[in-house]
Amino acid sequence: KRLPTADRLLKRGMHVNQNCAFCAVLTESCDHMFNDCVYVRFLLLNIGGLDTTDVGTCDVRDLWARATEILVDPLRKQGLILLAATWWVIWKDRNNYVFRGKPPFITGSLERVKLLISDWTTML
Ligand SMILES: [Zn+2]
Image (cartoon, rainbow, N blue to C red):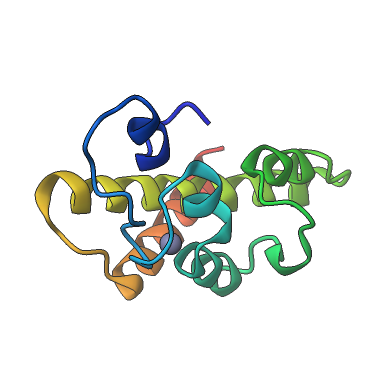
């Protein structure tokens, strides 16, 4: 929630593009970019991550809390890895767009998320 997303930078009076780097329609915020945006939902659904369609809130902290509350340890670990890997790739792709002008590419993002999940699952 403390990431320097467009909504927070605008509140501080900075002149930045307010549009989400992924959908280019809605204002970039932490909750939008990591939970609500069609881009992140596509990634989560395609890696078998948490089903975010029934989440009654758009708060990423609640989404993370739900993953930590899974009682069976292998599933909890896997859920947290899926979320962390997805969010890491989203943040990196967002920064590549904002700072380097490199537009996000969904199949590339999906492959990087899958690779991170594989690496982190082996390491952790
Ligand atoms: Zn978006």
